[in-house]
Amino acid sequence: MTGSRAILALALVGAAWGPAQAEISGNVVRVGVLNDISGIFQDTNGMGSVEAARMAAEDFNGGGKNIKVEIVYADHQNKADVGSAIVRKWLDVDGVDAVVDVPNSAVGLTINSLLHDVPGFVDRKFRPHRQGLLAEHHPVGQ
Image 1 (cartoon, rainbow, N blue to C red):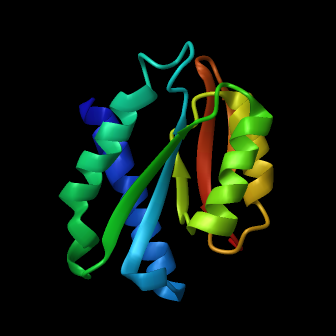
Image 2: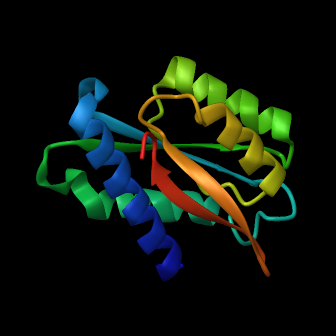
Image 3: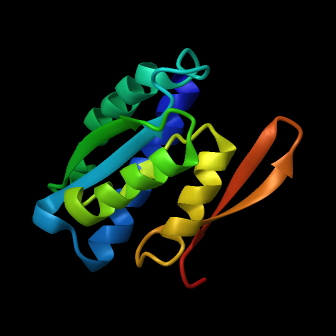
């Protein structure tokens, strides 16, 4: 769980720093944890990852910039269309600034194409790896 906390802490720092350069609505950075809460990945991700994200948000504590980090989460049910609908709602209604922890590659690739045209989000380039897909993060426009 320590590695997960470190990765999520880095995501929170990136989410808080990136939008801080542009605009953070109400000084709240919303991080959406989109994973498998009810299916085959629930033991390795699920609510444990949500709790790790919450702990990382508490540890980060706004990075000394008086920025609150709020964690929201949802179950994509290992379905690309469900994951895409959740992220669309998060973007259009809930004001989510970052999406993390998507263990299903079909869901991840669908969300990647959805987020590609959203200003301020990180463009993820996926490359093959012997244990699945690895994401290489590139700020949009670089």
